[in-house]
Structures are given as C-alpha cells and as structure tokens.
Amino acid sequence: MKIALLVFSICLSFFSYGQIEHEHVTNEILVKFKNDHPNENKISSYFEKPELNRLHNIIKVSNYEVIRNSESNTTVLIQYQNNQISLQKVIAMYKNTEVFEYVEPNYIATAGGKKMTTIPNDAEYSRQWGLKNDGTFADAPAISGADIQMEQAWDIEKGDDDMIVAIIDSGLRLSHPEFSGRIWTNTDEVLDGTDTDGNGFVDDIFAGWDFINNDNDPTDDHGHGTNVAGIALSSGDNFYGYAGVNWNSQVMICKALNANNSGSYAAMAGAIYYAVDNGAKVINMSIGGSGSSSVLNDAIDYCYNNGVVLVACMMNFNNNISYYPAAYDKTIAVGSTDPDDTRSNPFFWSPTSGSNYGDHIDIVAPGNYIYGLSYDSDTNYNTYWGGTSQASPLVAGVVSLLLAQNPSLTFEEIRTILQESSEDQIGDPTEDSNGFDIYYGYGRLNAKNALTHQMLNSGDLKNPNSSVIISPNPIESYKILNITNLKNSTYTISIYNTLGQRFYSVKKVNQKKVLSLELPKLNSGTYFIEIINESNHTSTNKKLIVN
Image 1 (tube, rainbow, N blue to C red):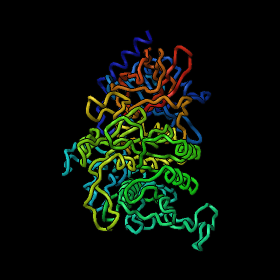
Image 2: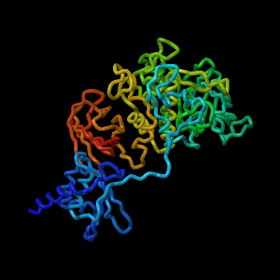
Image 3: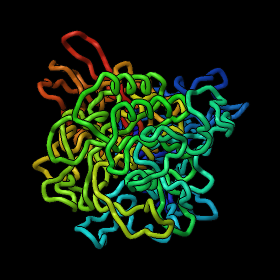
Image 4: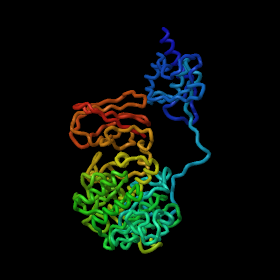
C-alpha cells in the first residue's frame, strides 16, 4: 500500500513540475540530503535506501560525486544514462522521496569572455593545409577537416622553452628569423679551440654538430633540413612566414646529410648519440636507408633506453620495403597523406613515387604539397616539398607538445597516445581498413586528440599490458572500437563505469590482428574496458573516453 501511494505521488508530480528554462548539463542533477541522518557519514549508505535504489535503477545512475566542505558531505552530483525520462520528471521523482533538502538541475555558467581557437598571424599560414584544411587549398584537391587540428591543439600547448628538439638532417639556415632566439646553445662549451666540456666535440657551442664535415657548423647546403625543421619548429604568431607545430622549444641541429641529400649510417648513429647525450628529448629523422645495421640499431637502442623519442619517415618509393631507422621497433614510423586525406600516391614530383607502407608503420600525417622555409633566403616562402619527410616532423612536433604537457611520459605511452588518438578510416577504403592497416597504420595524426588523451593525466590507469591498443580513443557511442595486438584466443570484454558497475559484456573470438567491437549506447564520460583472455585468464584494463 505504501509503495502504491509513492508511485501515485510521483505520477502527479510529472504533470505539476514546471519546465526548466535555463541552460543545464544533460543527464545530471544536484541533490542535498536532509540533515536528519547524523550518523551516516558515507554517501554510499544514503544510496542504499530502498526508495533511492529504485530510482537509481530507473534512471540508470552511472556516477556520483560528492561536493563537500569541512562540515558536510551531503551535497551530491548525480549522473545518469536514461534519456527517455525528462529532467523535470527525474527531479520530481527524487523530490518525492522526501530524503533531500533540495533537488535541482546542474545549471551551466560561462565566463565573461570567450576563448578563441588559436589562429596564428603568420603571413603564409593559410597555405599550411596540414595544420588547418578548409577544403580550399589551391594546389591539389582538398577536403575540409583533412588536417591534424593544430589550432585546437595550440589552445592547449605551444611548447616548452626548456625542451630541446633535435633535427638530424641536412642542416639548417642558422640565421633564419623563424628560429631567432631558439637555436640550442651549449653553455658548457667555451670557444677556445678545445673540447672544454669533454663531450668529444671541439667548440660545439652554437646549434649542434656537422657529422658530414666533422665541424661545429651544421649549416644547410641542400634545403631539406631547413624545410623539415621549419615544419616542426618555426616560431608561430610572429607575423611572417609559417607556423611550426612547436613555437617555443630549443632547436638542436645535427647535420648527417650532405649537399646531395645523402649520408652514411655512421653519421646518423653519431648524430643520434650526440643529440641524446646533449639533452634532446625528441629527435626527428626524415632519413632512410634500406640496409639493416647493427650500428644504427645500437644507436636507436641507446636513444630508447635514455627516454628519448625518435620519429622517422617511412620513405617515398610506394612499396613495402623496410627503410631504417623507421623499420626499427623503437622508433615511431610515419607515412604521408594528401590534402584530400588519402595516402600520398603519388607525390607531386614523380608518378612512380608514393608513401611507403608495411607492418612497421605507426601513423600517417600530411606530407604532400607542404610549403616551408628556404635554406638560401629569409624571405622566400613560395616553395613546397612532398614526402614522408614532411609528415614526420609534424608528428615529432606533436610529441614535443605531449612531453611539454607531461614530461614523465615514456616512449611506449607516447606511441600509444598517438595510435589511439589518430583518425582511422580517413582515406581510400581499399587501403584504409578498420583499425591498423599497413597503409595508414592506426590513422592520421590528430594533435588535438593527442593532447586531450587520458594518459596525459597523472592519475591515469597504468595498463599492465601496454602492447594492447584500443582505438579510436576518444570515441562516440555506436562506433566501432578496435582492439589491436591481442593473441588468437577467446576474450570476454566488459565495460564498466567509474562506479565499477558493469553494464556491458560480450565474448568474442579473435583470429586476426584487430578485434572489432560495436559499442552500445554510452553517455559522454569515462569508462573502463576489461579484456580477459579466456585461455590463460590474464586481463588487460584500458580507460575509454566517450565524446
């Protein structure tokens, strides 16, 4: 009888409660418990009341957060998932329990100003389709949105002044104003004809070292290095030229390519050791050779073991031949896309060229028709390049921004962030399949997604099996979630909310490199996925963000 009266009371309230006119957060209410529960100090005990359990089940509560002060913890934000019941009805139901002092929407407030997306004032910025593509690029077919969302990323991070990013290439136009005040200086060295700091290099004070001519002047005599360095590190918002990905960090130059744009593995290995030993945190190598080398592999291991992230290009021969250092597992290997978001095939300069592919590719990034800086002029901004060489520094630049946000990130964590935050299935459907594929890797670089990835938070779940990757992440409801690097086995996959409540579980057999899962309806928020291998009962846990 008592329950029947309660239900009748609630139904009456559905029709009597007024409309909510002010802007509010969807599927959230704020409640304050009455002060007639002096012995109850835990919110969870409040929610054990039968009338509240019933309502929680009806509206499908997914999370609650206590809004506390030094005297009370009776105010709570409740988040729920049932979209079939209006907010007015939800508030009425909670009010009718007579447990709460008040129940109200979670209203939205705004600041007295508006945050604008960071749009640099560089004179030639409109040509940089890889950073912002509005579909009007003049030199090739383009699609709006086929870019790395750099403007939104700059709202978050523009680079750390104290970080050193090394470019191992053909050198740099050291006098170029785009790098003014930002070229690395070895403060431990004195210009006196000796190796003052004992690092094995005489008078290596300004910029870095020339491993081709074995001297302290890594000036560019080809042009490739200046273009690559500018893509990653040109100063932004300075009214002229182009904007790099990272506007603030120090630029270290290690010349390992000669005037013909070629160099030896010895020069490459020496440059890697120099960059690591002199404080670089990120290295870009838009270089590749087809021979696997123990010397070069040792240098890559040294880089990895010292916590330095090396980004390398896949090369431009439109084949699946491995080129090094990209083919080494301890590098991030980058392919190239066009302004229409397809794999660069061919590049503008040769009908037989194209972005290389293979099992070792990680991601792709814009790399064709890339305008940039000139090695023999401070004012010539009218030339463009094309190649995976131009895609790689975009990734290296984003890596440097990730480390500026969280310097404790490991190489594997950074690779996971890049893979999980990339945009999948953006290209030719005959090549760009669901999840990982040999042409696009895990997808096209998205700087904004990377810089908002949950792993950047210090409290992020540490995955005991970092080789397992879920993508895309963040994701939307009903989309396909891809789980990569699982062994051939049967898996039970469960999704939990932040309260630890399981509301979805499925058993699937994996016989391919990628296991695909269609997500159920999920509200925006944070979830956890548990992946249990039924053959050996090992489990992997991943945090999932739903937009």
